[in-house]
Amino acid sequence: MSGRPELSPLTPRAAQIASAARELLEEEGRDALTMRALADRLGIRAPSLYKHFPDKAAVEAALIEQGLAEMGAVLHAALEGTAPSEAADGTGAIGAVLRAYRAAALARPRLYRLTTSGPLARERLAPGLEEWSGTPFFLAAGEPYLAQALWSFAHGMVILELDGRYPDGSDLDRTWAEGARAFAARRT
Image (cartoon, rainbow, N blue to C red; front, top):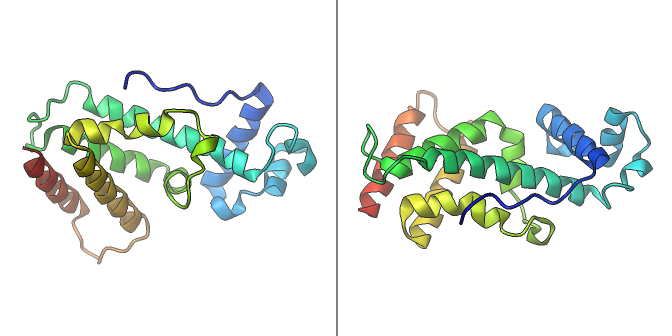
């Protein structure tokens, strides 16, 4: 798949609302992302938001699109110039994708959670965006089921790390590296 699909078009005002929603999400979490709180942040009445977004789910869909687009861009960039067998640690493209995924998820944990948890209203997303954002896992793994397993490993590791579920003293860098080595060995 070539370039990133275009995100769903937003008017300038809708883009401003989405930006405020993202700030609210990152500062206070998903539960704080309500139409009333969003309107308060923008200094308007909540009914005014419905001129631009039909419901809260539409606001969340705009944020999920941003999350998918940003993650996809990071992962595609991680693959540029990385051959499957090249990398200092011997994990090649798989290691590059895993390192980029972890860094991006940990940098924006609340957007990451919104983007990857719960049911996904695919019909509200830009066509092809979800596939494009996940394509680097396939390109790194070379096989669709291995790619799904690789993403599942990465997602599970990130969630456990965000939730502080690993025992004190765990060397998570090493755990990630071991996972990358295991998947890279499976690919060859």
